[in-house]
Image (cartoon, rainbow, N blue to C red; front, side, top):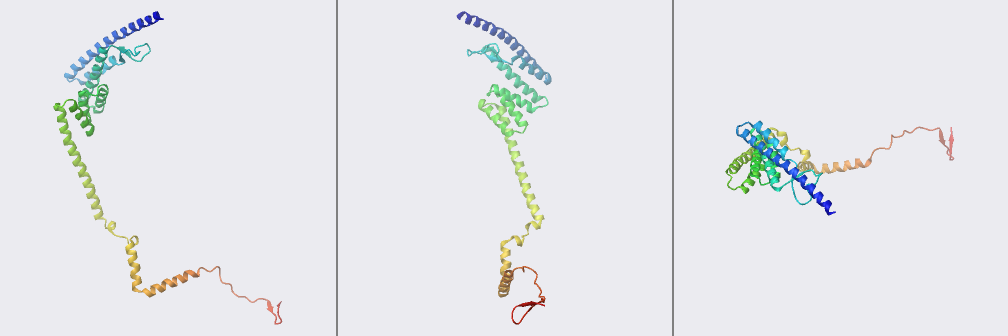
Length: 270
């Protein structure tokens, strides 16, 4: 059993070394692509820079840090690398997302896609100042003022002397004031319009007597005051008429019959 374990350990070590050698080559290729992208970016050739930065991910995707927890066996979905290599891969991934975001902010610009790349970078490193600042710029351009303020505030928490973040926050403060002023003006105009509509429509201000309990009560009291006794009498008469009710049928007319009453009592037929 010990010999079998030794053989398995030897095979695993060789397998890890093969992946490590491949990882080293991929890291070198990704680093070269990053430098190419930087050169294109400095020259203002943003499409070529985007193409170079985009290829970085193909060479640094699918790796995991080698640990003693059983990772690295054949059949796993990730390839184990040394902690040093894993740190290099993480930096290259951050460069891939952050530099792509910067290119997309310059070329187009494509603010939503640039913001998404910044968020992916922050998923790897939530304290990445470049990703936070660039996402704040994207949110400000997309009129997401609250989200932009949160990003710039976070930048200042990490770098209190970041003058660019201070400048962006001052600009946001002015935009907040302008937005608030526009909202107040819009609502003021809406209230003015409602008041003008009411003034131009007298019918809306008129009171319907039938719908006003006070006017109904006043009319009734006035009529009773003008003719109290006649009003009371009329009410009693109306009550009597209502008690009579409707006839059950048409009245029957009297017709003579052939049946005669005899004086001696009884009836006879003529």
